[in-house]
Length: 71
Image 1 (spheres, one colour):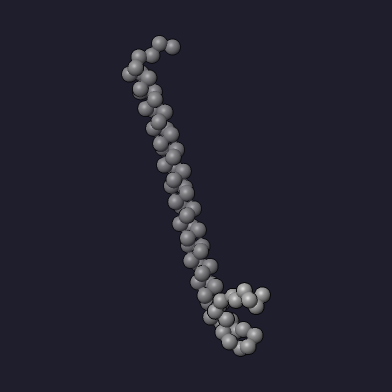
Image 2 (cartoon, one colour):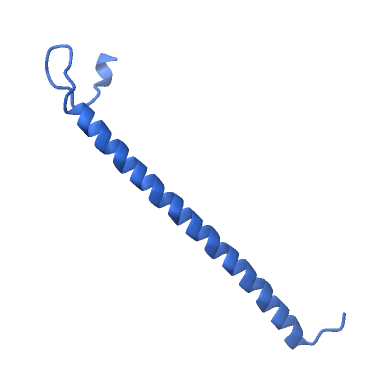
């Protein structure tokens, strides 16, 4: 294996470009997953808010939050 420095650098550059492309694909995939989770959270928040708006407690008062003292 008698490579010149130029040949070594060309191979190293190619290897690093392959690693970079894989990292970019991974980042893109994670960003898509993050966006989907954010949308899911917003949807669940909206659902919770719509259900909480109609909640009534033991004394007839509207329940807005959980009071751990009553658990």
